[in-house]
Length: 241
Image 1 (cartoon, rainbow, N blue to C red):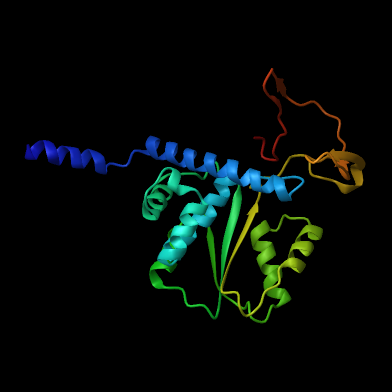
Image 2 (cartoon, rainbow, N blue to C red):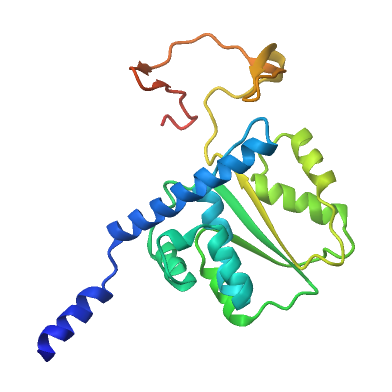
């Protein structure tokens, strides 16, 4: 009886990546549905980047108080597949989501905020976020904000977009830790976007309204696939992928 009991314990303690992937899928599916419902109420073009947001925001779980950890745990909908925050974080640390991750998350820590050593060590080891310590948030310097914009966009974002975001980022003495999250492409398209080759076009919003935007026109031969369910167009990257 003792031998059987020990065997069961050993098997139960093993990390099953397939089971954990299924749990993460259940979490993100539930999270996506509720997030999309909320976005549709307030946004004309809702964008739901659930996996990336989950990977980024989950890094805060080890640094929260017990009360806040429970709130964050439930807001990410981890309770649909996990019983404790530590179980969810442990799964994220062991699974490899780098092939599915298309975002960059930076945790900006104010120079006036003392991060506990265990939380600091965790953030350093956490594979889905970057840590930027001792930033002068109190003086709200333009130089600091510009540097953050360059970091979050990998220096590839349009200047007009970064200016808009920079102007909306009002930092002050009350901010201690800020999470910046942005999607990015690690590779560039072979055909770069050229504003000189754009023409006005109509973009139809989900709310039924139309917006006039600039589209880049290009004639060329592309690999294309279509069936009853999907249509796909292959646009090559500059390295040939």
